[in-house]
Length: 222
Image (tube, rainbow, N blue to C red; front, side, top):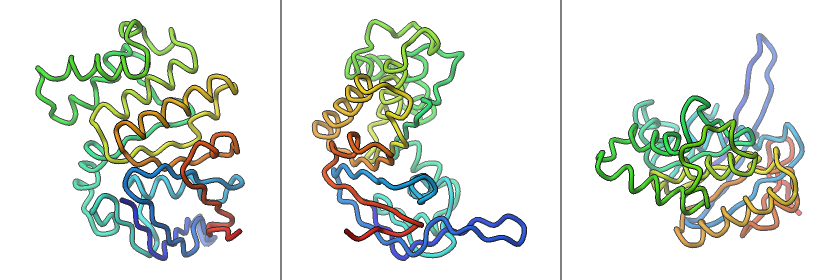
């Protein structure tokens, strides 16, 4: 599902080079739930951005669901994100002027989903995250846990093959964070999509099938 081979990412600020990833090779199988852990600045978010096609490596190759992200044109990367990659973040990234129902419908509209199918798909996703009765609420009317559940529903509405989660419980208390992890784990098992999650939390990492550790842009070997 995900294959990285000798991936380097160097950011440049004037004449200063800042290495974020330094020769990272990694394979994630289809349907696997992998947690990426490590200290701040180790390259976790850089890794997710590269796998999402939001950034390109300085060198090395990245394949996601059969697409070579290092060679694909921008239009192909945009299509990959619309159709096959869902993303959730620590601070939800919901559109505040749209209701919960409209937030979930948006990626389906952008995807070209037939109009007659959208309402049913939206209701199914809201039901899957226990928000069916909150569809007409705006994000500011929801709790933190509800906003993250809504973000999950929006990310999964297009039925992606891959879910990228960047610190999905970082803005929640332990109880709500645990509920979010249980939800992601359950949907991962029932829908068989792949999960790549960056986290600082050992408790969050513990729900994954496998944990990889990054330090200074490299895999840390136990």
